[in-house]
Amino acid sequence: MKESLLYPCVNACRSFASLDGMWKMQFDPEQKGTEEKWQNGLPDSFMIPVPSSFADLFTEHEKRDYCGDFWYETKFFMDADSSKRAVLRFCSVTHRCDVYLNGEKIGSHEGGFTPFAIDISDCVRYGERNRLSLRVNNELNAMSIPCGSTSILSDGRKIAKPYFDFFNYSGIQRSVYLLRIPHESIIDYDTEIELSGKDAEIRYRVETDGENEVIAEIFTKDGKKAGERTGKEGTIRIQDARLWDIDDPYLYSVVFRIVKDGQDIDKYPAKLGVRTVRISGNRILLNGKEIYLKGYGKHEDFEVIGRTFNPSLAVRDFELMKWTGANCFRTSHYPYAEEWYQLADEYGFLIIDEVPAVGMMRSLMNFAAAGAGGKDTRFFVSDTVSLLQENHRNALEEMIIRDKNHPSVIAFSIFNEPETTYPEAREYFAPLFDFAKSLDVQKRPLTGALLLNSTPDKCCCYELCDFISLNRYYGWYISGGSDIGEAERMFRREMDAWAEICADKPLIFTEFGADTSAFEHKLPSVMWSQEYQNEYYEMNFRVMDSYDFVCGELVWNFADFQTTEGIMRVNGNKKGIFTRNRQPKDAAYLLRRRWKQ
Ligand code: CKX
Image (cartoon, rainbow, N blue to C red; front, top):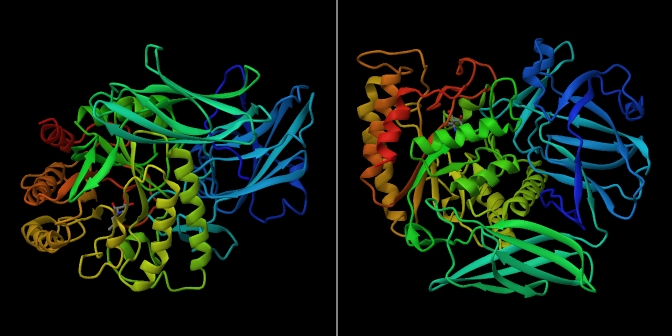
């Protein structure tokens, strides 16, 4: 049985301690840690904050760009109470790790963006200090998601070569918790929602690891009971339900309890947003009403902290998104920290939740050579594909289990810009779409962001998507600058071709954007100037507005972000509507005018 991935909470039955703080760290470029048993104590460590993305903390190239094995160590005191289970929850360790407790290996995990948990009840030393060590590795290869490669320089140093366009931030990037939960406990739950007139039917299912009875209760915000039912599964009817919507993100509370002889054995509280998401013809419906998605592709990315979650920064991002009139974002290109989804539930934002399946092309120079050039590298025709698919499947499972109960999550994205132009790509993706559908009881729409050469005549995968998501760069990677008129004509030709397919399928844009320096102005415009970014968006909106099957526009990107260095990037990707430190470029005002209408 997999350990529960439920978010930590404290109540009469459960508690947790945070293990965040300053840990020890040591790079292991020669991979001698295992042989020398560094799990028994790091021989020559330095201090590192946990959580953190280590790269931007350092001043030396070798440390910032370190690629390979590296170790972490901390000590924690375990109280003498063994009446509850003790579980370590790692919210994300990028990209893979082995975990040791007091020198013994207790688990391992592949995949850097979803939590995993290890039950240590039987091996932890109660009433003593315990040593927790991790051997982490951040190399990229054709089986890892995200995909990339690792090159070895002539001095033996390893360098990450992402097939994708964001910095390979890594480390223990999210919190580590020591959970104390009952021996018989709630492992997971899910809810399906049906609206019936003014009422809502909540079909719930609770998974426990025991036989005792479960009680489910729903409360309004002001604490009134809205419904109750006994049983591990059942339906609760909320009369005159207040729906969760972008303008009124109302959240009920739901509490599940395992009860024996009138006593709570376990209790898990959560928020419940009552809403439905459906596709009807070429429309996306939220609570039965058409919704047009306006917003961004984002990154977890900021100066110094890299990909670490920071609550102030997250609130600033939500406030800025709201200020522009946005209602949606895609977690490009990996599942974000859980707190993002909690905030989106509260703010009334819609999320397209993306698995880290990015870089699915064999890039020789940098991702742009393959991606923007639209070349086909036969990525899905290779011996490693089945291992990649296994990692992809696990990442999908962990993401859907983790995020399925958030009302903000309206769709899952299974990929970003893979090669889709030959049948092997479809053979690769079709079982993953089936698997994702089977995991999500809410049967949310599934999609995947299609690369610019995945046009209707060539793409073998769009049929798998419940709605089509296009990443398009007419006026940037294709016919930019003075040729923007030509770009518009080419864009319209492609859209005319989608029109036939989209008589019965919604289509949204998951990316379109132009690199823009916050310091450049030019009249008439040139590429990279703020004037050009505005003209680029005006042209793109003109085209999108002429096709009524377009159900959404998520611009690329919310803010400038860090990438690997190279001739295509000036200290990062500059397609942000906001700068990296969250100040508006001129285009922010253009979006605000359009989206606030
Ligand atoms: N799409 C032609 C994936 C994103 C990149 C974006 C860009 C590309 C474009 C592919 O991760 O940042 O080049 O700006």
